[in-house]
Image (cartoon, rainbow, N blue to C red; front, side):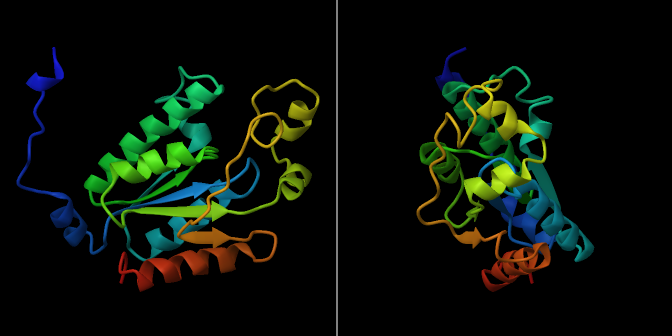
Length: 199
């Protein structure tokens, strides 16, 4: 079937109505940073606070997505880009459902993050840079991945033999080496309130 035969169907209940019903403005918080930087930890703590405040959220986590949606992909650059493309499409659908989406992925390349931003409407993509240094991530090494990468047991590992392109102008920067988890979550909640995503 050619693309010209596929037409987008506009339904009566749209994103704005779904968000209004949930008393929030749909958006995607895109957590990016090195492995071990604290992306999932911060995103998970934020989701808990938002849940307790009655907000409607969903957390997309890099490892979890690799078990299903992206289970067929490897870790070379092309596979990583396809991984993020798929996640971006899912995040877009979830935002369309009226949710506040928290997406925690290394997503090392600027181009792939900007590709996801372009999928969403203006103001819906919130880039959150978990700006933890490589040294601190290696010291933490919660999964022992840096040790394996240094030993050559893992190839294409971000920060070791694969590049990480840090965001130049993210909406939010979280300094996990200088602030507590509670302070990081407070910073994020304050941003969401100030920008009108939550009341």
